[in-house]
Image (cartoon, rainbow, N blue to C red; front, side, top):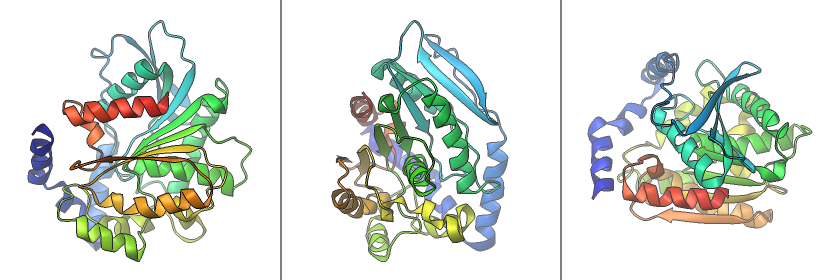
Length: 300
């Protein structure tokens, strides 16, 4: 009931219609979000009095490092927030970082990576790569996991692709946990057909958004970064992926399962029946609390 109420609220707010812009209207939307990106993140320090929250500057990228007070974390998590590379994070992301730190006995790195339209995807990846290298100065890669929601999930995959494609001397993490990731932008014809079928029940993401955002993020030789699904995934770590049946991005799942099988990557698929895009972000909804337990299990 609560999940349906939240879904109805998002529909009433018109999130889907807001993102379904083309041409000059889409450019105006980008400018609007660019202004939102400039506002400082309100870190919920009072709600998280049981955690140490350290603010670091990692080669120009502001990064919050969260751990449970008095704990000795035996693993590290790189948390990549979602928002289509244009929407900044909110306090709920930091709260989830704290829950991960507590439930997984982990230290969590939460970078405020550069976003579009001022920054290209390759700049975003170079920023998060530096954060990952900072993590590796403290933890072995076997103790590191990447967690990402929506575009952050796609970014986690793209970062691994970037490391491999550019032959960067950095090991991949031991696990990827991805909530509703974008894996091929723009989508293939078959993926688009599936997205169009589900667009009536997805109150968040319009399929045309992928066409609009793609050239803003990458063109030419950098386009491969937008579609990690079609890249050679051999050597990738185990992946846990989460999709809801009421979101267009689940259209990626069949092809992704095929790609992981082709390249020998272990993939664990988690399907939220009747759930919307990134339902795990709605902390007060029972289904969100339940799926977070699945996150923690996958990250442990």
